[in-house]
Image (cartoon, rainbow, N blue to C red; front, side, top):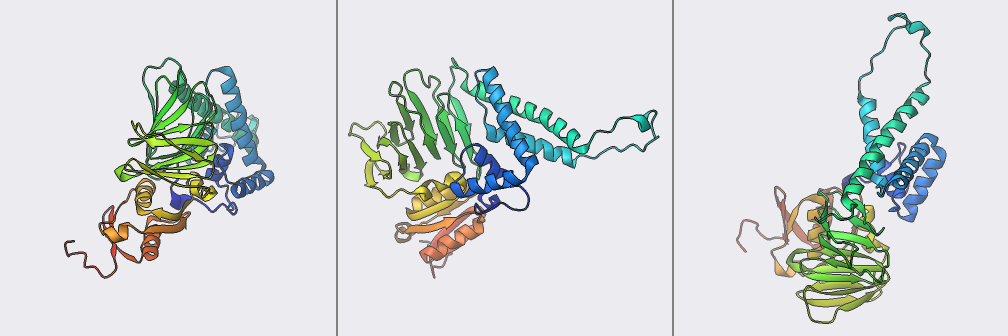
Length: 364
C-alpha cells in the first residue's frame, strides 16, 4: 500500500467520499480500533463500497484455493480502484436512438448492472495479477532471494511464505533468504519494518541488519535502523533477543513492552515503555516520545525524502516528543525546530537544523 503522510486522512472519521486507503488498511488488518470502527460504519451504510470489498475477499479466497499462492488484498483493492478511476475518466461514445440499424430495439442494460459486470471482470484480473506476483515471490525452490522495496513516503504489507506478516516502512528494503523456511527463517532489513511472526520452534526467525541480529521467539515487534548502525527494537508481544551482528556477547532479551536500542555494539533497554504509539507509523502516524534525533532524521528521510542534518553536537544530543499525522514536510520540520528551539536552513532536499541566532554563512 502506498500513502504519503500528507495524503492520509484523520482516523477519527471517514470523509464524505470513501477513504479507500483506510478501507485497504482495514481489509489487510492494519487499522487501529478507531479507524476500523469508522470503516465498518461507512461500509454498513454504503452498499456498493461494501460489495466491492466483499468481492475482493471472495476473489482472493478463490485464487488462494485454486493454487499455492497468497493474495495481497490491499494491492488487489488498489488495482481495481485504479482501473475503475481510469474507466470513469475515459470518454464515452454515445449513439442516438435510430442512429444505427437496430439501435432502437437494442435491450437496455441498467447502469448499475453494467458497472458491476465490468467491476467483476476488472477485479478478477486485478486479483489474478496480484496472486501471480505473490506466487512468483514465494515459489518454492527459488534459488534467488526475494526482495521487497518501498519508495519514499510509501508503506507496504508483505505476507511471508509461512504466513508471518511484515509492514514495511517507507524508504525501506526487505530481503527474504532463498532457503526461507527450510532450516531457518532469515530476512535482511535496511530501513524499518513491523514483524508479526508465526511461531515455529523448528524454524527460528531472525532479522539481520548491517549492525544487529534480532531473533524472535514467537512475537510481534518493530525494527528501525538509522545512520551509524543504530538499531531500535520495540516489542509489542512475546520475546526477542537483540545482539550486535556477529557478536560473541550474549544477546539481550526484550519482552513485550520493552524497547532495546543498539549503538556501537552496546544495547540499552527501557523496560515496559512501549505503547501502541511506538508502532503507530504502521498506520501513518509518526509519534515520538523522547526520541533521539538520529531516529527522527532517519524517519524524515524515509517519509519525506529530506536529508535533515544536525551538525551542532549539543543540538544533536537533544530528544524530540511530538506526533504527526497528515502533516506536510514543511509543517513537520517547523514543529521539530520549534520543539528544539532551533532554526532551519534549507537548500533543496537538504535541511540543516542549527541553534537559534547562528549565522548560517559562518563555518562551524
